[in-house]
Image (cartoon, rainbow, N blue to C red; front, side, top):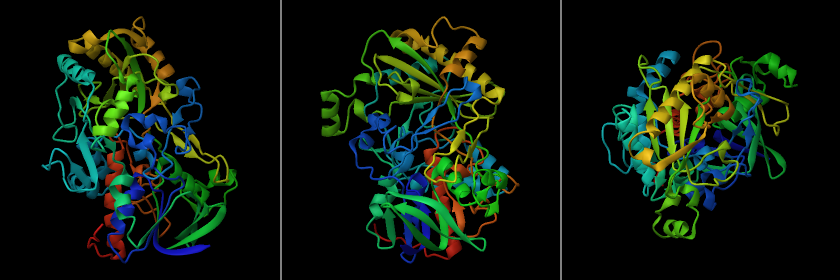
Length: 535
């Protein structure tokens, strides 16, 4: 079976949904979106505090890293959304864009000023519908709803006040004039319910006649003829099918699946492709290289008294959520945050702390068992690099993921400093009256060497993989600054994999911004009209 479209988008995650919504604004563009997963219409997706209950299910790619030498050979679980909305349907909903300096660095690394902060800020504002209203940094009326938490936990106020007492500046808006400081996060929610990229960009336009969305459709190969992408092969309903793209194929499958699909299609490092039995179509050595992720080290305390979110799933909690969309189930778990520098000489923050009024341990592999509080130290300016490689030419095999954690010693040094900062905050102000004994690493673990050893034992992922198809003009870049794959016409990558460096913060909002820009690039290149079709 074969279909003809103008643009074929692979993946209905944060980027794919954004592309679907924006590209189909032109009624002349016929767009097909292929998603390997299925529906997002389940309660665990809609209820914010239930986010981790979708992990390790059929709505999760359920990846794991290779054994990590820097972590004593441990393999880390990497959840990635396999459903409409992709990882925006299973994430912690934190709306953080990163620092202005991140985008200025992208502009410098790519040689394209269009990626500078001054140029991408209007794209962020265009996509946003912020409950606080519009200003220099924020927009209203866009598809992506951004709100303050409706029912924050009382410990969240305590941690902000304690961080201020420990010397950190208060920051009401991490996406405003400055990033550094402590405050509560804004979240991608609408009236206490998750508001994913599918809710924002895809569902409102599903009735457009020029949009086709197929779920349960796993793309296995990009078709290339005479150096040009002409379509894709995919599995759907137990059958192999083909979709032809008259104008472009756009990979929006994320930092794991996009490089995997390129390599399955014969586009990537030639020697590696031959080693797994894939015929080389185009030798592009950077595919799958440059992988980066934000590492996290938890510090956990027992509490003297009070109820943590461990008890959110009570009859009263569900009654509040189903009734007024309020109460503990509206929590995104990581309610407050801090951006700070591990060294005063740094120009920008390199650490982010997530503060959770619940015990978050071993990536929620087991449910919390006691009332506890977690401060997660996250390194947001990462020096270590990893890679994505094929294990087999069989597209149903999961790829090999080497996260490269702590391969650069600077990363561990900064994380240890962050752990010390977390302890400092916990020891002062109102939080000190809430917290009891330190459960992990444990109050007896003292000194940087001991903390470093504990960091290697307990480090986890914050689930922000990027960089595996990075943009640039050097010989290791995979796409150019317009996100076109080097050496293959009619093929783009539009997702977090194109980021040349990690942003200082969560990656969902930047990924949506990248897709906003890509939609403009595609429409401009195709000469498409930009008149908006009523939703």
